[in-house]
Image (cartoon, rainbow, N blue to C red; front, side, top):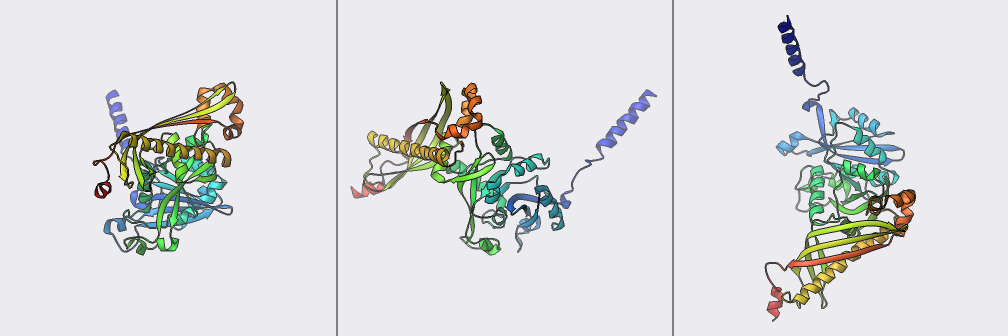
Length: 397
């Protein structure tokens, strides 16, 4: 009797395991979204989904590789659900690559957007988030791109590449942005994306059927937030300044002028930065220390003699001044104009001086506005490239 009961239980468990998932979605019933765009139009949310057309990707057909669906409603969830009235399949966001937030919505606040996406169990948190600058997010997602058939993949890859090699841009995922919104003493930042050219031209496949597309998507500027609201933009040099201080620069180029005309390009190959905040006798202060290793990668200065140590020392000093100036300008803008501590001095203060932090946490914006910051930059040029002096200098001699 006991053996029979065990067999019955074992058989029931096997049948249960073979029954499948109760909430499973079949692939042929889904529309795979690779990008979402969210805008605010008057009192409604306008949601845009960029969906892959798998047949066109495989066959390189005459139609576009992606389809865009749009719907608007009073709430985000309602707008997403209303897409079922126009899309033949359920929009599925588990393969999302990029989220584009419209500039006007960012000014009003992105808290509701982040809350909704964070609660959705079907969405992973490894996609990147950017702000559409001078254009609606929905329009940005309708521009077709060259090299990458799927525009969302282009935006994703370009942001990663730019962050590694240029430095003003940064990748921010959903979980990182959520942490910054909840973290005391540090305000969020997001990279901006612009549409270069006419949007209606960018929607046509003819846009990518030529050597140079007439309409392009380009990353430019960094959106500065105060809590969850966009308060302003940093230009590329200012963005670099923040990233230097926060140890986010992987590689970039510093261009320094020569005395008699021309420029020299210094490629930064290793950067290490340390940012600290402390309070002594209730007097707060901050320090930024940046150590950089670089190499000479481009020389337009004909009188430059790279065989001399004093020449290398001069290039190091000019590079140090360039980096320091960018950090100072970023501090000036975020302290005086935006009053937004994107550097994270408040977070550092919280860690080093918790007792003081409790007394200023609620009005840290005012404290940050007048925070004195000491900046130290040390640059060492290790290499001058595969050749010594410029061939132009040799020809003149």
